[in-house]
Image 1: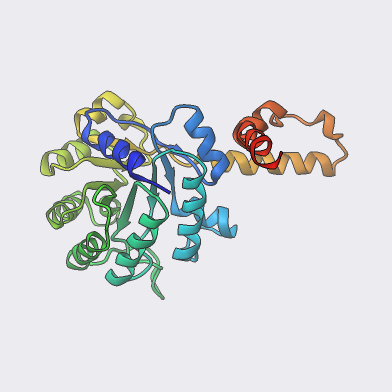
Image 2: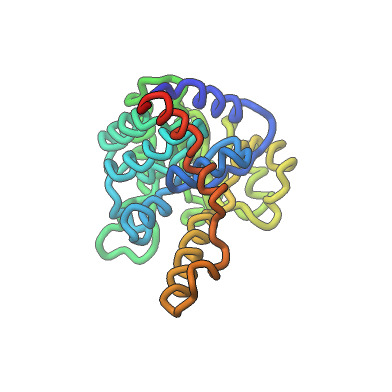
Length: 285
């Protein structure tokens, strides 16, 4: 498949002047819904991937091949530009390079690599970071694994909640110097923190889990924030819908009496039924 158009659109958003919220997606159907509703990009998180593919919490037990496979299924289902959370690159710098190769092939438009020490080492009780030098090496290896220059690679750090604002800025500046396309900060909670980060760096900024004072898109856009995540409620809502529906059926509710079930018309739309009907007529007689 050809990924150029969607990567060009993704790059244009990073190069623009406004901030957007991505649609949190986890499978082909959710990505089509986000695209139909007008979301400019989709976001496929590592935590959601672990729950979707394995039914497991976000403990880095998902493998790269499982993650890339699900990303490809999402991408082939439509034209929504997809950003993914590639966690720590599934290992050291060489693994990070391989991660970029696989996710580029899977059609993603942007990916973030973080500097958290993952998987959680034996005997640790709190998140910790790799050194800045190792983080820079991973970013450079990731950039070296990129073949399509349109693919965006973001350096990600949660330093602000682990080692503080000064270290977060130092890491952002180091990853910027390494050549990444954007900086992804997790844990920013105040305008003062974001102002300091924005003043100390020059690349487009991505924020994870904005709330409170950081929900004004105009303000965020003026601070070079181009993507602001809102969380991953769609997957949680899907789990609740499945649970409630199965419980109702188990408790004796008749299928015709169920609440919150997608209409036949919506099911046809999200499965692209009209396309398949046309192909059936054209190719199967």
